[in-house]
Image 1: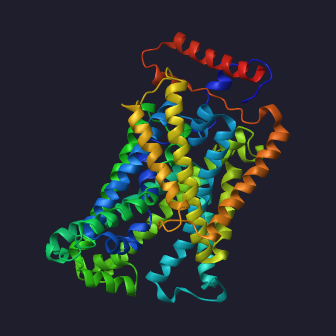
Image 2: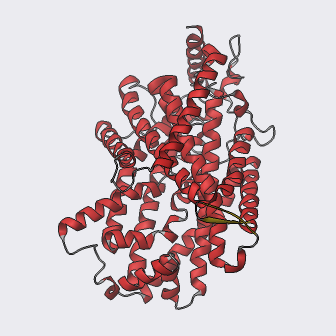
Length: 517
């Protein structure tokens, strides 16, 4: 359909290959659910110890501002180019096929790694709820014991999430909505209980990390530097753009809203824990269970049963992140395959559900195999994947600036004001995140094993690049830059059918001219 030999008909181009099934609420919960995941349940104590209660909250706000700048560039680009693939489309128009390949390949590393990590996190959290869960010891990997019951749960849940995504994005969004409501409900319960039963006296001695202003600033910056990694997930919105039945301008607004909600959620949870637990209680909890947020919930309600409520919320968070990144990763792979950058096999859509079935199966199988490597290996993969996401963010920010100069007249339903300021800040902030992974001693630098994973992924990318360049020749990197009737109507709300015909015909001519050249 996408590469006819003769002049294609208008219908060949204007009909999206995906079903437009996602409404505004679906889009919001997919992004928000991806960002709030499991980290707030297990890491809040560490954030407070690092920066203090108020210091950690401020750090997350600063980190959120970093992501906000990057998110603004995504918002404009997604609204202007609502096509499946997101980063793949943006970077292609700005940097060409090679830049697009690098950007998309790195974001896929991030998505796949998070999905694999969640496959290990899910059965692990069950051990907190049910201590007798681990049965049938098999072997040990890097100090982590693998049990048969642990593996079975991980594999079964991975298979179910894969099947839900194959059935369709709408089904995945329904699951996301239910689980995100549970996560949000658990967090809101903690926040309300902390206001009612907590006390500001618990903040004494832990408002900030130190009595020294200089050390406090350094601690806040330390929290701010790590916090953006907990906001990864808003970028799944552009990956599923062709399945979103929302005006293009509104997509950008929803993306920004999801980031703001995640920042507020994290900051309020940090303050809630500080109101309920004093400094020593947090230290004791860190040394005992490591689930400070769950222990804070138990203290707020004066019953250990409520700790399990937070843990269940965290379990739902694992699934929402897992679900979102499986959706995003499969769409990114589909887009690369559609552009002949990786084997065309990965561009196959399910005949009924119109989902990229082969891409979903590949990522699904990887998530089912991941638990066999144990949690230690998966931590390495996850860190390597975060690095890949940050590289992609930086390239998208650069694409934003390039396209403002290269294609100033491109229709932009959601247009960022003062683009030079926002674009420059987005490049600086995302570049800073990349630097944090690269600079030894920064607190976030990759270790040898993680660099090994990054380099191995890059090597696989080089193999695909060379193979597809040789096999598909001039088709390598081709990308249809056309829009649907609905999207055209959004970009030209006052246009009539004749004007829309002109838009589509001009788009077809551009594609044919590029192929001819």
